Image (tube, rainbow, N blue to C red; front, side, top):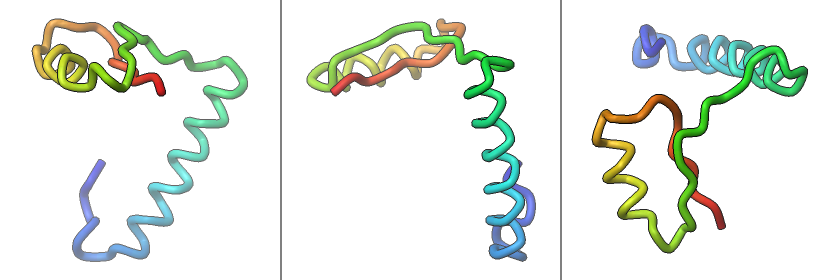
Amino acid sequence: MWAGHRLRPARFRRHLEDDLGRVFGLLGQGVLTATIAARFPLTEAGAALALAESRTLNGKVILLP
């Protein structure tokens, strides 16, 4: 995913924006769904980070405002 980010940064950014645009479009259409493993309030960011780094999850850790 990060190949070329140093050699051709403008080209890399364009491709990244295109790719992310497609992914977000599919998310918005409901074709893709994100797996959320845990939700934490922002005040518990340390615990959320520890859990995310534990490599025991199948999904993302979300911080809530």
